[in-house]
Image (tube, rainbow, N blue to C red; front, top):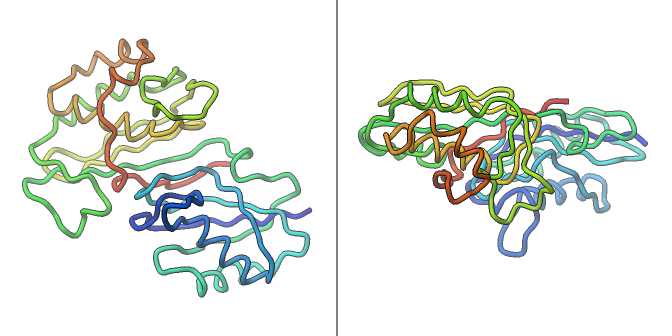
Amino acid sequence: MPVVKLVLEYDGTRYVGWQVQPNGPSIQAEVERALATLHKAPRRVTAAGRTDAGVHARGQVVSFPEERPLPLAAYVKGMNALLPEDVAVRAASLEPDGFDARRSARGKRYRYVIENADTRAPLGRLQAWQLFGPLDVAAMREAAVHLLGRHDFAAFQAADCACDHAVREVRRLDVLGQAGGRIELVFEATAFVKHMVRNVVGTLVEVGRGKRAPGSLPALLATLDRKEAGPTAPPQGLCLEEVFY
């Protein structure tokens, strides 16, 4: 059976996250509502990843099997006419039988944005973590190198993560920008455990503030203890940019 693949962009500010939950609106509910209207029957989709409340996406991927797919334009123009303004379908394609947005993924790229200015920036408050006082970006870069490669990231895993293990391979972790301006942390990995990116960011910010030495991260990884790592960075700075297949 053919599989419909959709690439989504959304502003996660007013949502409880990707997954349908009883305590508020979700991205999944909006997407499935639009699909049900198009097909005149319920449709359930699988997402490449479950973004948290307040987290954004430029390249979230969802899929669902469809015996009689609609013209691809219907999944873009038609759904965008039905979706709220903060959610959009960027592209649609037909994939072979067996394609699954989550299981077929070979990796993901996330970007976390920090605005490191002297004063708050109201227009960026929903798209970045605003931190005052210059960060030592060079120290953050030095620390990030220790997280590249295959490691057990249990020290950066949320306590309620349902994964069987926290072994992941980080292929890229760039710290871009400079103190006093916009700093971007770009992560690419085969997969991520819950809150992994935000917990790493919180830890690297501690390095940038001089509260933790750059060379201390290998020992931190070895503890496998979430309590030894830094705080969880707020969600609004995080964006799922791309899923690789």
